[in-house]
Amino acid sequence: MKKFSLYIVLFASISLAKVSAQVNSNQLVANNIGDTNAFLDASTNFNTSASSSNSIGKGLVFPNTDLRLFRFDTTPSGGADGITFPSYFDGMVVYNTATTGTTADPALTTQTANLTQGFYYFSNPNGNANGNVTSGVWVPIGGNPRVNVASAETPTNTAINGNTIYARKGTFTTNGTSTSPTAYSPAGGFPIPATATAGIYRVTVFKAGTGSVFANGVYSYDITNGNLITGSPSMSVVYPAGTYDYIVEYTK
Image 1 (cartoon, helix red, strand yellow):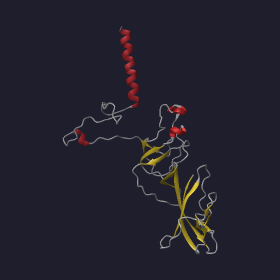
Image 2 (cartoon, helix red, strand yellow):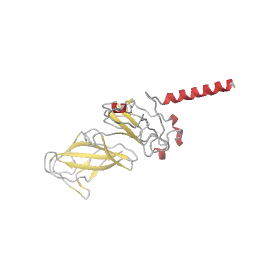
Image 3 (cartoon, helix red, strand yellow):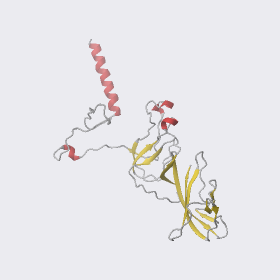
Image 4 (cartoon, one colour):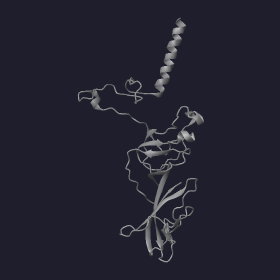
């Protein structure tokens, strides 16, 4: 009987050690909310008056993560059936410490550029269908919704069938006699990486600092070399000689 009791104590001690290795708290966390929408309530009590210790303030502290170095470890995900992580990390939140740079996880098809310090969540709604994290992308939380399009590839807030729309800005020069620009800046235009989902979403032509209005498109755009033909979808047009601004939006 004594040996049996000793076994019970040892088993309980090992079990508690395993739990404490996964969940750490500076104070006792009581999860007594039962079968409700919240899976965990860490409140010590419901007294939020000025005289309560709760008024001092409590919050959830996230570990710091450098998304330039972050790599998904899918080993414990249960393989193709995702036993441990059925969502394949969709909705996972981290606090990113990198103030610049691009993610580089080789498991992801789409990398997130122009990293800033702050919270990011992993968007992977198709994880279950694909059985992996490949289709996911890191998305900033609560950042400025405006996207500053520059010559560097910039992910926008728009997606088509789950594929992020990217944008780049440049200029082209015309001689007034041809529908083909004579030069681009940056040189060579913007060739689009060849993938199964690559395509031009939109090309916008404008002239900064003037009241000139041009068609929000071009007659054609070669995604392999970035060359365009001026005009509209219905006819080619020779632009007057000069330099024009343009933005290419595309999937890849």
